[in-house]
Amino acid sequence: MEQPTSVKVLEFCSLAPPQKTTTTNPTTPTSLPLTFFDLLWLRSPPVERLFFYEFPNQTISFFDTILPNLKHSLSLTLQHFLLLAGTITWPLDSPHPIINYVPGNVVSLTIAESNNDFNVLCSNTCDASLRNPLIPHLNTSNEEASVMALQLTLFPNHGFCLGISTHHAAMDGKASTLFLKAWAYACSNNTNLTEQSLSSSLSLPQHLTPFYDRSMIKDTTGIGAMYLNSWLNIGGPNNRSMKVWDLGGANAVTNEAIRGSFELTPSNIQKLKQHAKSKLKENNAHVSTYSVTCAYVLQCLVKTEQPKANGVAFLFSVDCRARLEPPIPSTYFGNCIIGRRVMDETMKLLRDDAFINALEGINEAMKKLEDGVLNGAVTLSTMMQIARDNRILTTAGSPRFEVYSIDFGWGRPKKVDMTSIGKTGAFGVSESRNDTGGIEVSLVLNKQEMETFTAHFTQGLESL
Image 1 (cartoon, rainbow, N blue to C red):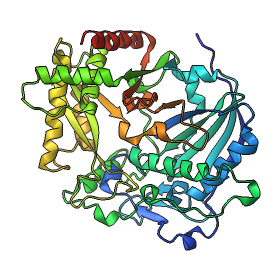
Image 2 (image 1 turned 90 degrees about the horizontal axis):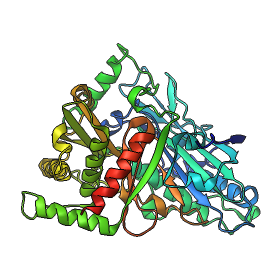
Image 3 (image 1 turned 180 degrees about the vertical axis):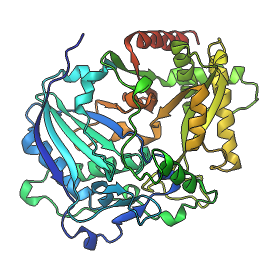
């Protein structure tokens, strides 16, 4: 058994945007209401990611070069993302929660050092407990919740880890990676500057500039009011707490939990698609990389867990930005995703044709989007009803986020891990770190389950 990681905190920093940001960049709002897209996630656990970076050479100094650039570029980037330094509150005189920034608000940045094995932490399989101390803590209370927290952990002579925790009610995965890409852009443009010549302002290219106009988000079905009523009455009446739900129970990560990453190569994906097209009942059915990935992982997970529930529900998110009428820019900052569900009998996902059964359900759910992106969306009450009688499996992340492209000026990440799936029980999906066009799948299971899942995953691909 590997020894627990040793992490020593060196410094607690508070990073703020440059002074006079609100006057020099008036397009960046200081307050926004939560839309119905945001309200679903009001008390959800933080979304956590770790980015591991190797040093480009052994002579580079983390404290003299990397850290100053990361700090300075973060401050500059916050000019365009003021609300990341703010808080989420639900004032008594407000009908809905708001994200609010006031001068003096800061982003918490923890600087730490670890003597653990950098390569073990970057490997495809490691004890879940090893990465946990690298995750920054996001402050929440009954009165308010921070929007973002960061941690930089140095591994001397090897590299560093950037940990980020974000409040899901403030942004979805696409928005948080937009911020990270903007920060990386700012940092990579500052890496060759001396401390005296560092710039004091930042212009972002259009594809990295956040779009904040929420007037385009129309709640025509009253979903937001239903969410608000639900939150007020959970532990209520009139419960406006910002405390994050403690999921605990079956989703809690134990000391024996294992974090595993698995790759579907382009060849694997092509074989899965060919197999699907030969078995699907519908002729010329559209078979996407994402759908075959999720169907294959579902098959392996259900066969691994052997759930006792009669039904299995698979919930996945759909980005609505391009699907709304009218569509909104891809750089919209906030949440703009809805949940879709696939329901199936447990026995159907334990049979030899489990992959096809799962894929048919996913295709059917995607086809219903043609009737309107919000029709049939999974709501808070729907999720609670489903959870009573079914084993729920969910996914997190997307290959379209391109997390492995986030380069701060010292190379691509060696490893990216969505650590929050250990709390939610979801499986993560991203593009392959090998930059081959494949897909990387990550999940957290106990040791025996991970061994069983690995066997199903490997043997299933070999039999194609």
